[in-house]
Image (cartoon, rainbow, N blue to C red):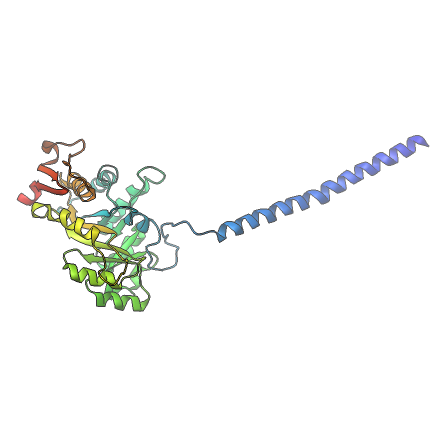
Length: 321
């Protein structure tokens, strides 16, 4: 009788444990799943981290990701360069080597190009820098609107378009930088809802530039273009002026965030030395002498460069040819 009672108690305990395992554990797992989902919901409610727009992103035209981060510095002004080879025989290896040197040595903020294949080669190399320091610089297409879609498919982070092409079906799913040269053009664009990124000619008169800045939104990304290798390095002194330019008496706070040095790289021995020179010279504040880091005149082909009193001056063989 006692043995039968003990056996019954043990059976009840075993059944109880099985019931606990079968009922309690699924509930515990279910609660864990709910907690995970709740956590994800909380995370999704947090402010989004800026990311480069992907090919699957909806079209917005905003410079919201890598373009905005790289071309808008907390202090000073960003300097980007255009790669426009003299020779049609430029190889993918040439592009990839230059891409690496511009990122690591010259510290350029981004690279502009008008050729789709060059965009492809530059984008491919820049992707290899992901997770490293310095990280990838944006590759920006500034060629024909008819080629924009091909450049986007091959990795362009942004495209430059004229104001008349802002609604082109060729420029979906990518950051857009719009060329403008007057305050009226800006007003027309703002009326369409575009207010994100603009490229101005840096050669405009100061009052014309101030008029444009006066109507631009404070949050707009504003770039100004300058021609490379000017006499007495005028692009450097002008770049410094543009970095200090304000919108005038209206109290507007839009300002020029970055410079594009057009034709800076052409596929010769002076590409990297010149870009290094202009990036560092524009960023200099105090009186000092500019030095080509790790390079000599014999190696890079330049005649000499000096930065005195905050103003740089250099001579380049390319301009003598």
